[in-house]
Amino acid sequence: MDNFIRTYFFKCYNQISKLKKVKFKNMKKKNIYFLIFILVALLVGGTAVYYYSKKSEKAPVSETEKLSARQEQLPKAIEGKDLAACDKIPTKEDSVICRNTIAITLAKEKLDASFCGILDKKENQNTCVKEVFYDKAEKEGVAVCQQAGTEEEKRDCEKEYYFTMATQKNDITQCVNLKNEEDINECGQDFSEWQKFK
Image 1: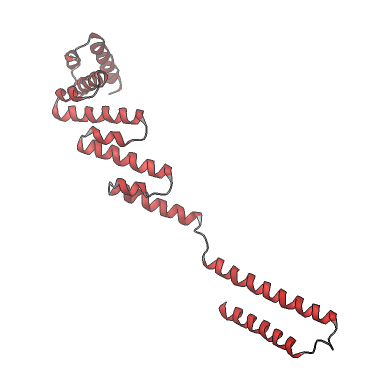
Image 2: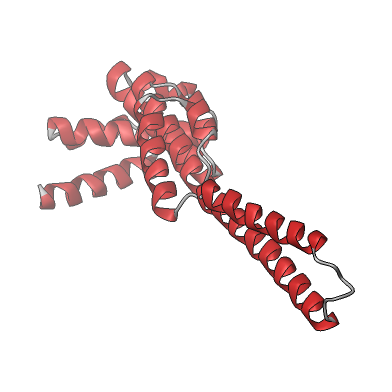
């Protein structure tokens, strides 16, 4: 392409040189205008070809290439549990998905509710905290529920713990360990429903 452009400009230069040699007195006005028009057209055309060739060399990234890059970045960041890599993902939606997935994974693996604070929505954070305490109580005992933040979270944790114990041991009497009569009845009803589908 560069060869074509050099040749093109060389021809323009030759045309200008020929004009200098011609005696303008003998030329008709019409021919002079015609030659000037040709030179300007050649110059504009050559410039357009040159810029077009440069532009095509720097073609923008296609949507398919962008999608491919996103599909590579997201799984790598999640697999590596790398929150910093999530921030480098170009689309906000994918970045949020990345951060949420890693936060939930780390919270459940480490049984550490502090990772729940990374989640994007308050309702997701609350659900995450409850699940971490349920899992932790199942491993370490019901006393863990007292570490939950609010009274409601403590109560929900205990309810879930005793219901889980009742279903694991197939023993409804586990529900009686709850402190509140309403919670005992709810646990008993949930246990009865669970037995129907077991």
